[in-house]
Length: 125
Image 1 (cartoon, rainbow, N blue to C red):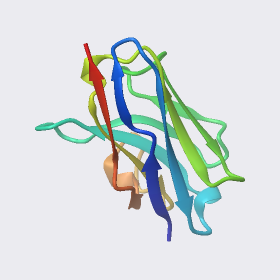
Image 2: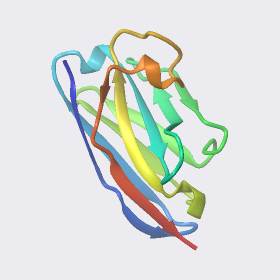
Image 3: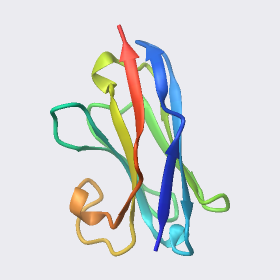
């Protein structure tokens, strides 16, 4: 089992940068792919970025490609999302998730077995 706790959200102006972190506890973190999703008010939760267990492959939603970077440190049991050139439409609650059993693609919610509680990002224009 994996427990996930996000941190680092906040408020930033458009064009600014922010990083969020997700600390994991549990013995399977290094075997799990990790993903970041976000959910804006009134909208469905959507894929943002994912990284394989060894960190060698990374995937991004088209809307964040070139602006966001996902990374992980397996020694620290932590996954990061660095966000640059933020836009008001990036405003959402950001969730990290762990995929231990790989039931689908890394862009799909159903693939992930464990979820954090979320951290809020607000981007003002």
